[in-house]
Length: 593
Image (cartoon, rainbow, N blue to C red; front, side, top):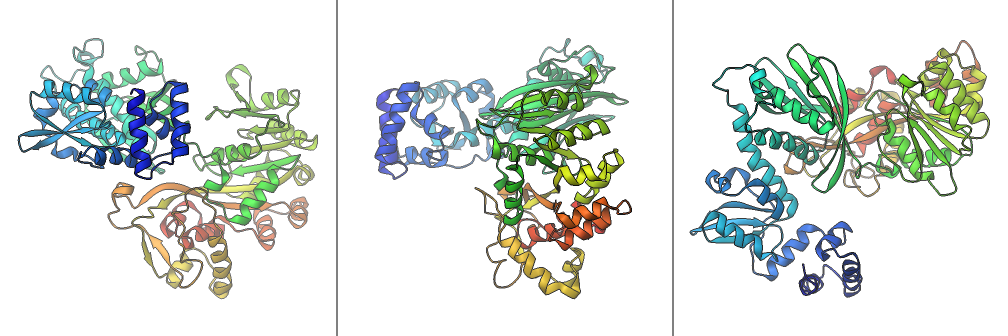
């Protein structure tokens, strides 16, 4: 885009109130210095929303505007005339026909060259419709994937032999490549954390893990399994000829402007090779504790803990409960140029600027314990250990905390008091636990209700009983939980908190039966944590020092001093309107009250 076009765009946005003159002048200077289009700079800096920008341009030029494209209504004969690489490069796609013209979605109304090329490809007159780029990208993938899906469902005339359909012998591999690429694009759009490619007797099934739940997504004919697996292996740098042994690899992809790190694992099964891919969105990792759903008091306690000069803070919970995200949030809070932070992880999930991160490799002797021992010679202020798994690692962590270092780590226990008994089982002396461990945070993840379609209802006594709330002290307990619910901190996204729950009539919320467009008709969108924060104060330490005390005795002492157990904290999130009773019950144990 030349300078006059950039100024024209800027003037339109100023005239429509989307930008001020001062912001435009600064943006134009930066765009000229960096030699980038003004539109790209404004969108990257989130100065203007893409929908606002595209609609402003469309209105100015008298062009129709649409937020989405009705993919199912796009005629197949129009798509056949437009190559996918052209559609992606220019972000244009046919939408349908009207009054003898082809309606065409365009992301940039100021680009006339793409329309000229489309006229030539289609051999028809075209009518441009301005549509946001993300909606066009989504439509392109859905439309062309529809064709590839049909191709990959067709059985081959030459039988079902897998060897005949291996990638080496395939004459047309483009549908497979596009099919695999679409898996990645759709996973980012649906916020999936994992992709599972699983062979059965007669087909290949793809399932996504979305908000912790596995969702069947698409299928292909069984004969294409070797080609699909080979494509993934090529991208991950794995050996495509080795089909008898498990393999692990990594892919870094840029998908819809996001850099996504993909961990690939393949295993041979009786039905054929199975592929699982874990997706890590490097740009979307929540590094701010205020986004994780803590109550105000919990957040203040954690802030106090991570600014202490020494001691141990443990985060506990099963695999996939968000422990690493919480630890990264703690590190981000104290990451300053004057603080030396070192981490030992298995593996390094997200790269944090200004922090030394080490990937442990037990096969060559680089264990958590070995890494910790080396860290102590690197003059650290803060050490994060991915997991305390054995006596040696636990002892070194205790020693590090007693010699003036703050240690953050995780343990696999069901609740906070269980972390103490786990350390005792590892051989750590009770007096060392009381002198080094400052606090234990247990957590779980629950799905968040979609704020746009959730339904309010008045809770009954049965609802309170399900949440484990004592009926004898119900009013007192509810008053405390409602205060905590009103203090729930959600950072930038406060849409989930029910404003009416802290005052007036008490309401609970549940998912709408069929959801809405915003949540892909699931009723839930995203996940959030529920927490059990046990501070090791004098009373709790006295109980820990008693050799006869078990985790239940430790829990009773902690609760006397204000600790909420997981299910109670889940009740806080229910009262806040963030999640449902069903989610809390599924994530917690009945015996935790």
